[in-house]
Amino acid sequence: MAGRIEGLDNVHGLAGAPKRGILVAGSLSENRGDKMAKPSQVSEEDHEAHHGGGEMVEPTAASLVTLVDADSHKILSRTEVPGIVHHVGISIDERFGAVTHPCLDAVSLIDLDSGEVTDTIATGPIPEYVVADPETGKFFVSNAGNNTISELDPDDGIVTRSFKLQGPPKHMLLLARARQLIVSESDTGRVSIVDADNGETLDTFEICGDLHGVAAGWCALIATQVNALKLKSDLNPII
Image 1: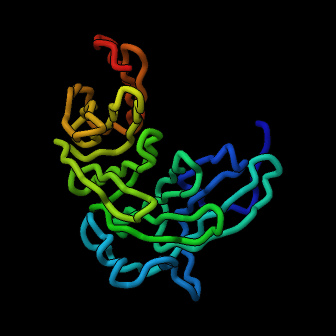
Image 2 (image 1 turned 180 degrees about the vertical axis):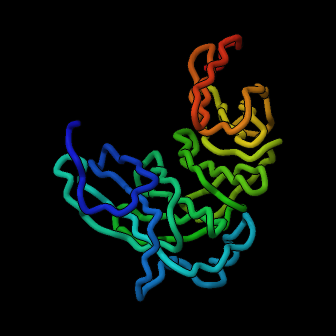
């Protein structure tokens, strides 16, 4: 073990911004503070217009997202966001952190310069995972509650499009140059390869139920279950 970061509560979701030398950590612990996180740069009317994925559930509590110096492990700042955080992603230019709120059906965007929440956008029911697209500068968000993946533009704070899958998406892996999303569809026991540009499902592989994480190699998919690891290697090259 190289080190340990103290002072974090019930961490869930962790991402790094290597150029900035920071870690961004979410939390599953609710924090009932005096100030609920709200967008800092848009009006109420504009905020409502940005909810391209549906209505956001009204937050009843907040949680803290913590920025940590990756070298010294010193806590740099804490940002209050609405609802607990399940997963954290960092935009390719390291301007934004995106944190998912599965209980609110929304994702919050955090300006990593100011540490402020710039917007909270409804993406779809039960958004759990987020992955950055280095080619477009946008995020993909998996919405397990309605079998969709949303594309989120952090600059404008809007959902630009959503596409449908056969089952509830969980973990995603983006093969950016190949323009393919590898998606674990947990309840159906499938892993799908999705065209990242048009949302079309290119191929689907039956693994088994209760899938969670997913990884991909030259000719293999690796999918994790709660108590097992599954490998499917009889594939055409996917990278």
